[in-house]
Image 1: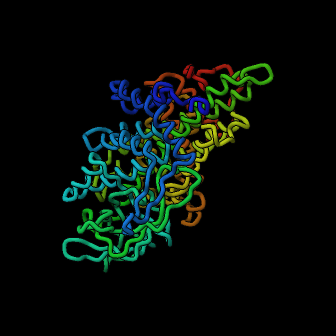
Image 2: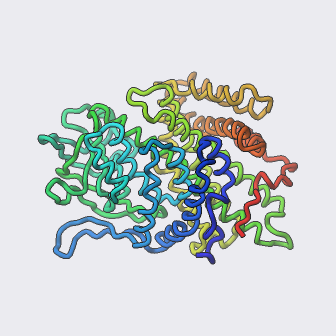
Length: 535
């Protein structure tokens, strides 16, 4: 592996300047956990990096449908190395449920980054999440997925509707103490064949149509008699995320247990979706960080036309583009995590702080996906021909980045959800208040641009006719995200130093004004090539 990757065998925490600085800004406890985070960084940089590459290159999960006696089992076979690594990664899920912080969980998810492995952890702790908050009667399953070797999954969408949950057809029928699910076709089911238990949406008989009629259920792989409770039709072949088996699951009389109150099921579902959108944002920037580790070392080592790549002005401009996207995206993602950490104990109908956290999750999920796709693409370009070869590490990160705009609702869905949060919950009001707090007293013209742009964008959406507001919403989604990223970078300078204020100014010029960086920053290598040599 050392012949295929510059980042392999290195400490991915110690080498990540942006993570160290920004994590401590939002979560000061990180400074007290430096040794632990460094241990995880070493593990992610060696064993996890190699296993993820190995699985991607030909050791994907395989579906075993029948055992030797001809019984249907629908179980995936994982490579032994993947099994061992997953068990060592299991503690990543635990901090929020042990009185700790979501910052802690998501920092470790960022260091992991591989979206296949991280997806397995995310969908497993998303089983724990609604049980922890709303179903103490089912807490035994929470313990199993967090501590006792079980894996979980979240199966919400169906073939006919996708992100349109209101189109779901799975029906729930009560039979004594349990429920049974019928006519369920969960078409894109991550964790299929691996999950020992899943949470799934279904509509109780007699419930209204649309998303508000959905309830959330716990569905074990085996029923009370120990027999297979649902079937896996097939696994899917994917461009990336190969470590997580994704397939098609069918419910036909599947035994299930109601989580909380049936009439609140859509709220529980959307809460778990918010958690996964934050995971998507964090993973996107973690993927970007892996590509940065590879490319920063590449430009230091590689020479062209008599000079190291890193000495050429155009390469330096590209490196600055990468640094702006990585710092701005990570600051935005961690700000969203921080807001969620303050609000996640809220329950329906929720408070203003929860609606604000959800608002930020839409901004972060969408913009970080944009950044990850472009960071990894540009990293491949800077590698030249080697960047396009599957045998080397950097090519895989671009494939992996391309799932992040799609998972948990693509940009159109994020834009519509953002609009709904504005119109029904007035979530843009605390958003503007936060921007005013962070930017209103600054003298920088870039801070004034960010604040004015956000105000104007929101005012335009509020004035628009319904269809016109939808038309404008995706552009607004990106602009509001960029305004908040600028604010967060400026604020990070308080604890992490003036580098982040300068990155904030350049980010505002690049993404809010469409201006290129001035040539004067060409020599400011600390902005885009910090001194963290791998060798």
